[in-house]
Length: 226
Image (tube, rainbow, N blue to C red):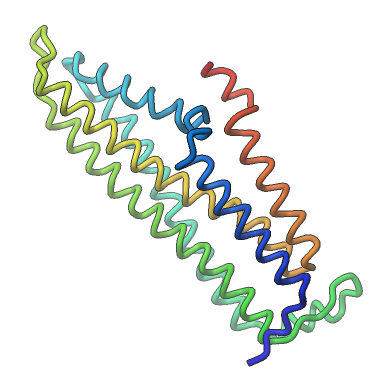
């Protein structure tokens, strides 16, 4: 099976992989990521859970957790719809290629290459679906931990502090999976450029990388937390 991948296609794919994996390592693993917007929010999650311990009525905490869970559920559903759209596009390959052939600005790819590109796009949404689905489940576990917190009676015991720390870490893990699912969505926008040309693929990937990095370190929301 010949994919008809040009050298430029392979360079674009390599750049895409380096951009996504490099950004993920920088934010999630490297020391530089400790100063990101995501890292700042982890600190606030710990503050939230410690404040939760001193409230007699924790309905507000449950509502906040529910909002986070609903967000994960919404994106999981969106991912599933996007997967269906990719399957539909895969089944309409001939019509899509005919449309491209009628467009003078886009070079018509081979059928096999078009199908490979479409399957690759679908895989992004499959990955995102699992990330959002797991985040949804973890936020559900977080709600159980909030419900399991002992009643506040004027003093926060060491056992309560341990529970709050565990709940905060679980919430942060759930947020991490949610962020990775959104990251797949964002980078899929850059990937769409490959359906037009490798140059647009590389440019779109660079644009997504710039926007994501800016939001983590240069945005108004980042400065608001400093």
